[in-house]
Amino acid sequence: MGAKISKLAVGDIGRIRSSIGDGFTLWDGSSRHIEASLAAGASGVVATPLSVLPEPFPRRSVEELQATVHRLYAEVDGAVSREDRMDLLTSLFLQAA
Image (cartoon, rainbow, N blue to C red):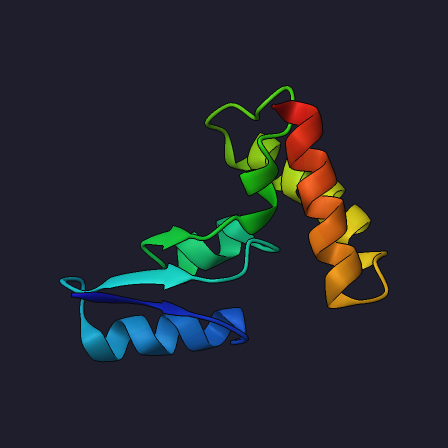
């Protein structure tokens, strides 16, 4: 069993992990703090900004992943509406394809 959690502070991940144990898969829905989420007990992190398949795709390094995610979030956070964010992500995906 498992779940994806969202809109929680990193400290909440640790409290949830300690209450449910290690046998439960716990995904953090925010990739703004990958290393801290994993250290707090998340099984993994959903990195939505990576869905656009940036070029070059980051290697399996938390530091490189986080840097790429931050760069993409800076672009996404600059969008003024949900529709603008979708247009941006679609455009980024088509550029990478």
